[in-house]
Image (tube, rainbow, N blue to C red; front, side):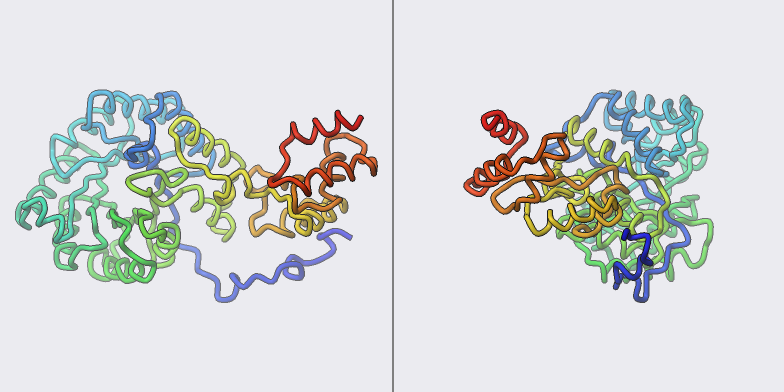
Length: 411
């Protein structure tokens, strides 16, 4: 009997569905891998060909916004940003680009030039610090901050750039300061407002408070404004904060592949995609997610530890006898649906992965038999006993070569 004989609710009672979260009216993701992600001191800035491949993966995964660089940084960054913009235009990739800039006119100028050269609109993501601690360190005053905001946003709008206005360290800023800065930006033509948890300070409860403040006091029902959330992971809350932001009414959440970025990193956009898919909020095909992760891991040095959710080496791999036995029983029924869920909260096939059974000190006879049979090797009892005895004496899981050496020696 296969799982098709049952209703899904008979096999899995889902507590997540009790008073489920309401799907947001708008749901966008902004990929920061190629800009904020590359600011990590441990990350390598990859070749332009790699960045172009990253854009193509974003398109496959259904990511709709991307930060393609901060072109005021250097001529090399400007050149790379222009090449990425031209690829978006020539290949008609369904991704809306933005570029970072301080609220300084000279920072916005290269974005205007790139937009004109590529022939596509590029959103100017203009940012300025907003917290009292930043104000004190920089020696700023409110009049100067408002003047800077007004000049940069006005210049961008006059040059036909859509504008995203970002306050750095929003999550530690005073309400009065935020109101003045954002209202000035809106009056000058900004249409996207980004709340930035620049130092990873806030908790999910704080996210809900802050977004409620923005919706009540700044957005005030203006349907022409979009509200974004940009989080960092210093306290380990980045993913939870991002879902709190969507729950509270954010239209778009920012993230980077494998969570690369300043200090301990940004929200991991791969984990956002996985969970949005599992919640039924996205219909996107995510089978290429692993390939995008490998690209960033290989060419940028993005961390991909063995126990990383969904994408790590061990995410769908076991050598434990009890676990393996249940998975193998499901596989023998010819039921991959069951096999991929019996000991996993994430369906492997949804993300281009599959269950792997290994041989190690905690394995059972079924592990060895399955391992051999899946490689077209007859699971003779004496061979199984020999491999199992060796595994029980080992301090770790046996690798492929080690098992094959035992088989060769036995034969």
